[in-house]
Length: 599
Image (cartoon, rainbow, N blue to C red; front, side, top):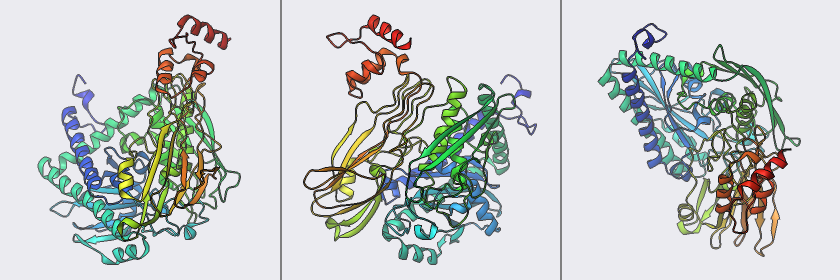
């Protein structure tokens, strides 16, 4: 900005843009250092291969400051609620304290996400900041060996150990009561212990680096930076919303039928944009009450799911996702609602994925319908068997029990206003932050064999900008052992919808190949025991397309055809492409064909 007056924050204090940029990058670097610690020291594959964790920094008054490359569904809303919950039960913090928190009824996403929370206390005993490391567990004590108990009728049938803001360290020493409880209830106690230490180490790294930063810069300067950073972020969000037209639009979706909900779960999102005021309101109150299954959203996931759709849809990546920009988005919830604030003992076991996606996706699709050039199509639904939890005994290691979640193959990316899908996004709330497993690493880590992993033609959501094609993965036990696979698939009936004339992606499909080679279809919810010689075939969902397929640039269609992602028949019948005998594009014939189709 040109003059000092324009560089003032809402507090009236002149801000230094260069200093703000430097400090924001230093905070981001600390959050990344926390993440790198967790990634390199986590013991379970869901952490050190799939990267299913997040690390954030909060202010002392519990506002989200920095989240680096965290999973959006983990951190946009929730860390703030959890930090307030810790302060409520432990009003006096001391250096060396740490807290374990995984309660979905008190700010967490779902019970499988264990959060280590550490207050940063300066040399004068003043609470300055808070760090939080959230790590998805391979096993969290559920009644069955999975962290996704979608069929659980309540939290008691779910069975997870739940720690609502429980002190886990004092004076940097573990409280052994907590450790003994987890070792008794978790199927892979040594693996859990390694992951607990990894998350704790990440939080302590954050504490150490923030204390150094405070000593280097000064706590008063950091306090001023925080206020300026939040004000700047809010102004960026006001600007982004101001580019949208004002209006109200509703979008609906539905989770597939499931145990406890035989008719599925319909969802409705009502989005109101007030461009002049720079505000967006998302209303989730017109949805069913909490259901007798594990699909209910926690409060944190309800709000975050809507926020994910908003941030995806405003098409302005310069807006920092923090407590400042969040001031401009209001999400309306009601108690005892399946997409609201759950009442104990309703289970929230699957809160981060299935039904959360049925909020994020219609939110970003609603923005697409409100204004051309904004929003997105829908990302594919989640948790086919390749995102399921495998368990069994490993004959290579003295028949030890193993439990781990796979992310062995899932695509689902959605078409956007100006770009094709980001293919390996996993699901909309993940935003591509989790990584696809290496086949070789999975086969080394578990008695697992993967004979096939390939993209499937003609499964993308066709559009001016297309969604991702489906991926097929076949896997099963290696050698003479058996393997149990539990998965919670949505999208076998209701696939990812397109936006502004784009077509839907292909649905999830699941098959089992018997020892005799016979292939049989499997249900959306699966608890499959694979015997030696048997495999499960997982086909992930395709992503929805954005805009009419007939307007897709001919060269892009030809590229997809050459890559084998679509067939010639689909190129001709869906995209209106005409090819000559040599397989090259006949532009004149293509334009005529598309004009005729349009008429």
